[in-house]
Length: 147
Image 1 (cartoon, one colour):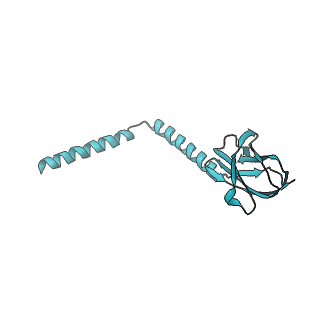
Image 2 (cartoon, rainbow, N blue to C red; image 1 turned 180 degrees about the vertical axis):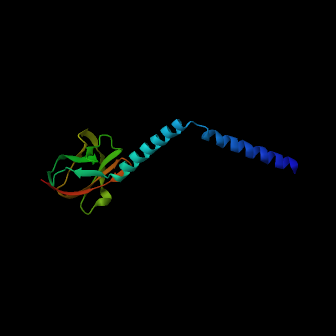
Image 3 (tube, rainbow, N blue to C red; image 1 turned 30 degrees about the vertical axis):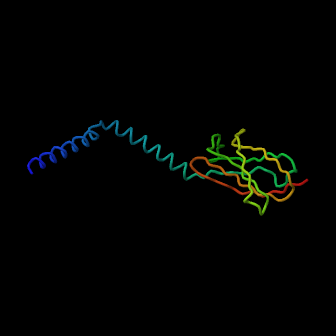
């Protein structure tokens, strides 16, 4: 029983000494760490509170042919140049289960584009799936494809 008590006492002292080492840092280092942590936390909080905005630039009427699908992505009024993903999902109205997806590529000033070939006239719907700044936005756009 004395041996068990002795080992527990040694373990407890080791734990206290190990935890005490962190407290031994100079106050300057701790302040710098806290400032960095606070700045990063504030930046993250500001990013997550500011919504990503997506404006679909594709016209309401397009011709039956290859069309450029476009969306402008901004965050806090600034263009987003490096979105995690921009995907255009297109389907003929009433036939979403047969939707097709094309990946958008960055061109300039927050604008992402993808080419899509329409083979049939009609009313189409599209989601512009955008993932940026840890947010996912997917505005829906409806347009007519005319011959």
